[in-house]
Structure formats: C-alpha cells, structure tokens
Length: 174
Image (cartoon, rainbow, N blue to C red; front, side, top):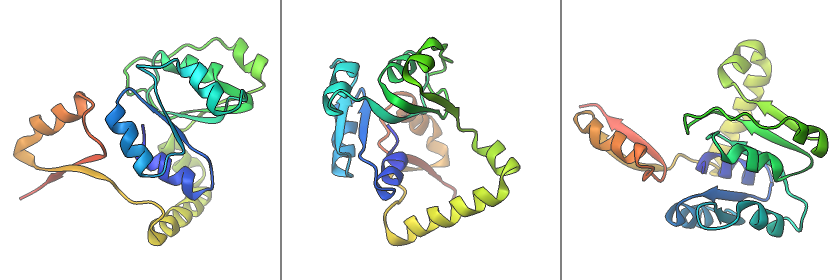
C-alpha cells in the first residue's frame, strides 16, 4: 500500500482501490481517502476487485511489491488496462504469463524513475512542477510513521521489515 500513490491518484481525480494484508493499514488508507480497500490476505482479491469495478477490472495497477500478487493483478486488469511495475519489495521478481497481455489488450509498464530523469529531463521537470503544485495545495503530503534517533536504527528497520510502518520512517541526526 502506498500512501503517496493514493494521494497522487486522488489529486489526479482517479477512483482508488488500495490493497494490503493489514486491516490497520487499510483503515488508514480509508481515512486518507481511498474509495475502496481489499485485504488480499483475508479475501479473494480477484473476486473482490471484480465486484468493486462492476466486473470491468482495474484500469491501472501500481505494483511496488512484485511477487505472487503481480500475476493476480495482471489477471485483474480491465481491457486495455496498465500494470505499472514500480519495484520488487517482496524480493521476488514475478514471471507473469504474457498471453494475458494479448487476452486483455493491456500494457505492462516499467517505471524506473532514475532512468526517466536521465532520458527525459524536461518531462521530469514538468512532473515535478505538478507534484510541487499538489504539495503546495495540500493535496499530497508526507506521512511519517515515526522519527528515530540514528542509534535506534535496529528498531526502525525492524518496524519496516515487520511491515508495521504506516508511512515513512525518519532518522534524526543529533
């Protein structure tokens, strides 16, 4: 679940459906404006997404995790949908069946920010102007889970690795 992606999608006028394996995280997402949420650990992800989209499927899936849910997300896309591959936080690089792109007329798009900046600096500049406008208007903001002194790095990284952080974990230098 990405709180930033939620805010950005809302600012762009999109209806958002967030997924997580944590009811606590999903409740926070609803408080921050998610239209719908799905706990993929306790419900049938595909059936629930189908129900929430009146059988269409998702137009865009933002996937920063990878792993086994990527194929489910790809299977859950609407006709001409788009799967945005942001990263592989699960540690597993998925190998989705490519026949699904044919059957759904969909795209799988890699989002490699560093390379985008290098290859398309003007488009990046325009994106940053839009992003800063959203921030200035209050449409997006950073959500901080906790601020730790640098000496407490084990505690901080423990919260991240246990997937307990509900926002950014920040280190404060003394």
